[in-house]
Image 1 (tube, helix red, strand yellow):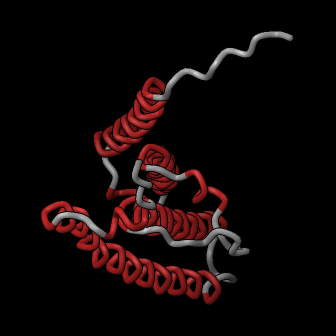
Image 2 (cartoon, helix red, strand yellow):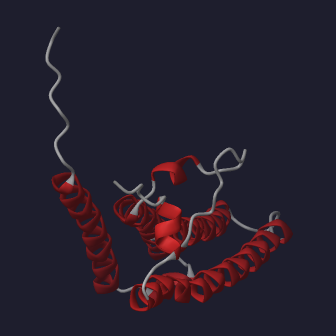
Amino acid sequence: MTKKEPAAARSLNLQPLPAIIFGSRWLQLPLYLGLIVAQGVYVIQFLKELWHLVSHATTFTEQQIMLVVLGLIDVVMISNLLVMVIVGGYETFVSRLRLEGHPDQPEWLSHVNASVLKIKLAMAIIGISSIHLLRTFIEAGSVGNPEATRYTVTGIILQTVIHTVFILSAVGIAFIDRLSQPPAPEKVPA
């Protein structure tokens, strides 16, 4: 009887073709680094919008303040989405981050997989879409707002339909994920 090799030793001794295929996951690294750069752009956008709000705080109407704050929330939600994709995607598809025991390890990272990541992304997209839809309703309903003229009834209806499709898609993804999970064993009363 021969002793089995440890898993780490087996993975280091891959044949050339499997090694190339498995190593190709590192081609995603520039994509994740690019998303980090995009997040930096969102930080700059957030600071610009925040400065705009602070510098006009005394002259803005309540509605204008609300619209700028919705824009800030939108940037934060997109940034959160980027963090989920960067951290979760890298951890799931490229390499482990080895954050176990780190005080800042995200709670959700310990149970992230491709399925969980899809559902989290769908929920984030619904949140972002909700902010955009609310902003559209506020701007379109403003009497005397020059921004209101850029919205047509058809455009608002289409935006609402798209938002509804996002919601239905997220429900569908969650339902399919639930169907693909093995049933939990039944507990027999003692």
